[in-house]
Length: 120
Figure 1 (tube, rainbow, N blue to C red):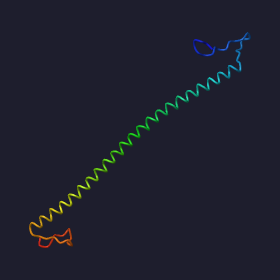
Figure 2: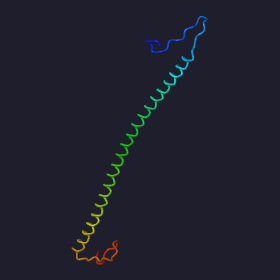
Figure 3: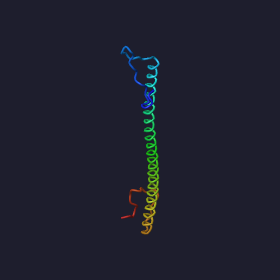
């Protein structure tokens, strides 16, 4: 192995001008190539995994925020329903007080949409 480049030296031509390749050199090069491919694949998978973990965490945060917003909306709807019911009851009491002030009695079996008898 060449100390300066970290690679195997190139094969040298023999006395007949052809290059000598040994089976050991060929096996080493195949192993090195396979190792390099495995390292590249591992690096690519690690990068993809980090990207996926980031996006999963972001989606979890978004989901949590959405659920919190949904809970706030639900609580607001409950408060509005309670306020509307209270308003309806207060209106009924005010109408009864108004009618009582004028001496008009409303009977429980009267139609709520119809005017009570005696009312002009």
